[in-house]
Amino acid sequence: MKNKFERKNKSLKRKLRNSYKVRSGSDRPRLVVYRSNKYIYGQILDNNTGATITGISSKSIESKKEDKGKIDISFRTGEALAEIAKKKKISEVVFDRGCYKYHGRVKALAEGARKGGLKF
Image (cartoon, rainbow, N blue to C red; front, side, top):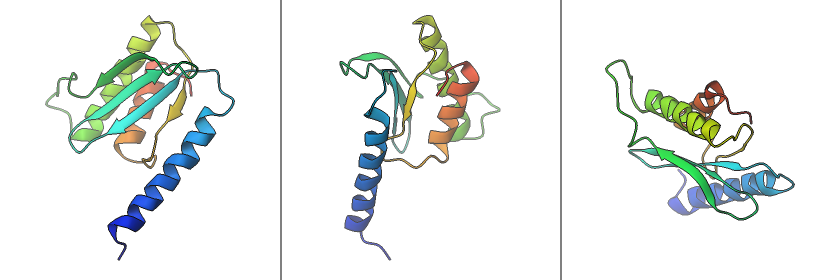
């Protein structure tokens, strides 16, 4: 069984590996994901200045009866983020998942953003 220091070390390695790939040589804005136990957040950041262009969280998305948990809400959060990005004339982004695996809610947010019209 892994202790908490080994898990944290793996998470840190994954974060550094991913951030190097995302930030090196890209002029497109970044779609950054933060996932808490209860909510998921998505922000579009300017890669050069580090300023936030737009952002959204699953707090602002109303849950529907047909939602089957956090994954459906994450998908709709991604769609809403893509809508806001279209209004700001952003069509292409780089997906920065941070230390999170591309699985579950993070994947649902990315697929929702793609369905909404963002290109990764």
